[in-house]
Length: 556
Image (cartoon, rainbow, N blue to C red; front, side):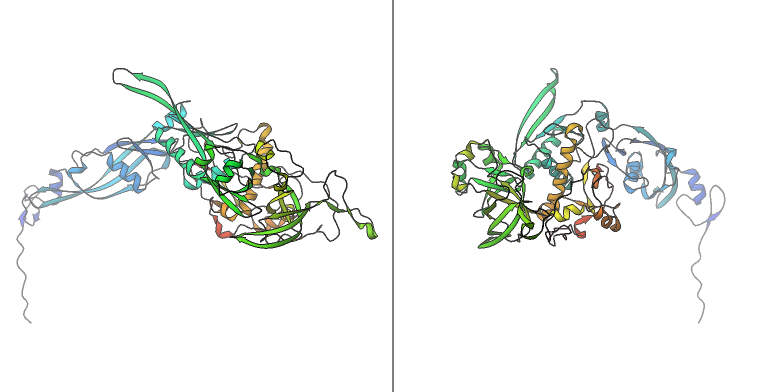
């Protein structure tokens, strides 16, 4: 095979240094071309970026402040926006060069291309150094200066407990409604939310109207006005009142309103609270949905709250055949818990009535309940003892005596499991920001309970009742986020079963109970209830750190 040489490559000498090169329009080699033409001309080699140390955000031109981690793509985009002249060249590559974190310097390497002569493209790599200038963003500046909020949302509920706000706090966290909040402050009957913009306060008011039955009213206060430009500066306040009806409350509906609600019995219990609340007649399983608009047209209050519940022992349960979903109507015989106790004697007098308490403490009550599907003889239930109660209500006084039962059972309780004192393997998060604190993270346990004082023990009791409601109500548990308690180990959970008195979980003081006489065979060493609603592992989330959240709990 005959060798065929390729075409000859003609070369010329560089006009400056005389190096043989391939012919081009400039007749210059690459080194001489770079010395002659600088494509980085017009691009500054030093610049600066603004950084807020309180919220850890960078200024993204022209006025936006955004979060960006060191050497991230977001921070690189902010740095490139600060450069002038990049629109005249083609940027092919950009990356950070490592610097000491405390040096307040950022170094960026850029690779650019530009056509310098006809059909001649020159590529060049160079560095730019940024000086990190610390300052305050407008939001942090307003937060540092007292009383500079623009809008305020006052949330109030006229009840004797804080369980509604504990639940509301979890709903706010689950839906991220606290992200625009400048500060949160606890007051006597509720919470105050501070905002830097009016639109944020309106958005919070709309969120509250979607999760609880409320009525709201807005007002504005003129701070200053400019007569030349016709502009004015206002502060806006929104008052939001939550209906004083909570889950498990005993409610007596006015007769006229009860007839309007499908002629339901006036004496009901509240089974669910959302944007509206649901009332249930336990004797017929008839339910009525009361919207916020209907309620505030003719408001009424609860006769008794969950703190007034009395413990009963179930003696007998007989279903009557009426079902409605999970609810099963049944006739039940109950007695007050501890009504039958052992006197420690022998023979036939070993089991006697307990006559230490006056009245009908040892009486057996017949009632109709909606818990026929979960109650068994020997179980314990919580209910309202109407025979020994006195209500200051005109609507209740108008009811005929034959329509008022002796006992209304509300829910099943689990005293044996509670006596074990086991540590919970889950915890909640709380809003940690408070009005007047610098930064996004505040100290303390959260907004509910920060006031302390004489009501601190009462709030701890409300919090324990709220945690029990979450354990016993899967539907309610599905509306909040539960997190794994990473400091709790399985051996600690088992060891806590034998712990008595002292300090309970999450730092709540637990008084040591006096020994109670126990009936033989009645469960001094009673096993736990097999149907106790344990929180499953797949319902728990990993406990990630969040800038606006703090632990509500301190595990013991």
